[in-house]
Amino acid sequence: MKHLVWFRNDLRVGDNPALAHACAQPGQVEAVYLAAPEQWRRHGLGDNKLDWIRLNLAALQQRLARLGIPLHIAVAERFEDAADCMVSLMQQRGMSHLYLNAEPGYDEAQRDRQVQQAVQQCGLYWHRFSERNLLEPDSLFNGQGQPYRVFTPFARKARTLLPTVSEPIVSPDPYPLSAPVEPEAQWPLGVSNRFSWQPGEEAAWTRLQDFIEQGVETYHQCRDFPAQSGTSGLSPYLALGIISPVQVYHALSRAGAGEGQQCWLNELLWREFYRYLMHHFPKLSRDQAMYPDKEPIWHNNSAWFERWCQGKTGFALVDAGMRQLNQTGWMHNRTRMLCASFLVKDLHIDWRWGERYFMQQLLDGDFASNNGGWQWAAGCGADAAPYFRHFSPSRQAERFDAQGDYQRRFLPELGDGELHYPNEMIDHKAQSQRFTQMVKEMTHVD
Ligand code: FAD
Image (cartoon, rainbow, N blue to C red; front, side, top):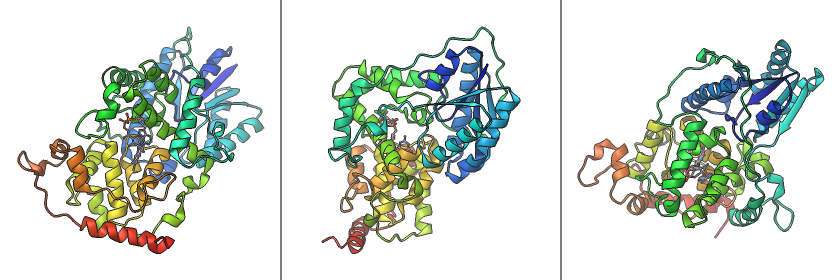
């Protein structure tokens, strides 16, 4: 019997139910990844994320080869092409069973249903396992049996369920046969590779362990200062499933329950919350706000948007954040919040424009977290920052980058002396007041 494991957003060997189940069967195991360039373009993925996928596939190929499992990379341009591609691959290679782990997302679910149908119609077998999140979205509801829309009660309930999180699934044993590693030339897209994260599971574990040993205890004190490396930097790995939240959670649990650990767990729960919302509110995957009545009529000024994208707004911390994003494919959470708020509440540009730009640039681009973060900043999401609360760029800089180290790192024009950064493109106070007014006009709030 021949078994095929379909890798998607779970590019790891450890804690991988689909792989573990396939390997537990008698017979031979092979693996496949379907590259979908046209679909990725539609989803707005940029070169950084695509290259990050490529590098991690190469790392996975090597790991699987050590287990005697070849990883094929096939191209199915759009999700609609996945069913035909999968069936012909299975038939060509004489595979009878397909194994995969669930993935969130509306388009992804539709693709999976089509593949399942096609596979089963050809008399082949389909084995789907749940995603290795901390919580099953259907296991948490509020007192009225409705999905939570507010983070704090969600997190409170989630914490009571965390003791039931299963142990990570161990990696399968190597097969006696060793398989050749397929050449990287199969990759259907260009190569950019300009970021500093190392690909692969080993690198993810090294980062996790370093953070647990050196960073987590002080996380609550350091996490908001973008000049420091006070956060884990695990997001690029979590976004592609190179490490699973279950693995991260168990490593954290062994590290004690101090203030830093609790605070970090809370952030992992934000990630769960956004995935939970996406599961229960499919409209979020369709470009819609959670609360559309809280959206004003946007004034989408393309020239302003361009200045924001390039980090040329004249507000130093905003510009430093955007340039960090453009230069490294990653941005600190503090500046993500500020830059998002600035686009929406100071420039009055539709949050969807910003969401798309972040997705094009981010190495850790993750639909649920990105959409959640943007709707939070815009004030129209579940448990969002209220429309009348505004991030002041100068106040944020005073509080979180008082010495200007982060601003200087990304704005060479600041030099070493006094922070002097003229030419603010708008009047922050006036634009904030105008935004409040715009929302009030829509919602008739007094
Ligand atoms: P740590 O502080 O070490 O946190 C550990 C992990 O918890 C992170 O890796 C991440 O998986 C999760 N996490 C932390 N904060 C959040 C949060 N606020 N929301 C959801 N999950 C969180 N995160 C992404 O992974 N992908 C995105 O595309 C993304 N887009 C965002 C867009 C906006 C506008 C905002 C405000 C936030 C966004 N975030 C996104 C959340 C957050 O900024 C990043 O997860 C975090 O900066 C990653 O750095 P870290 O791994 O060092 O995080």
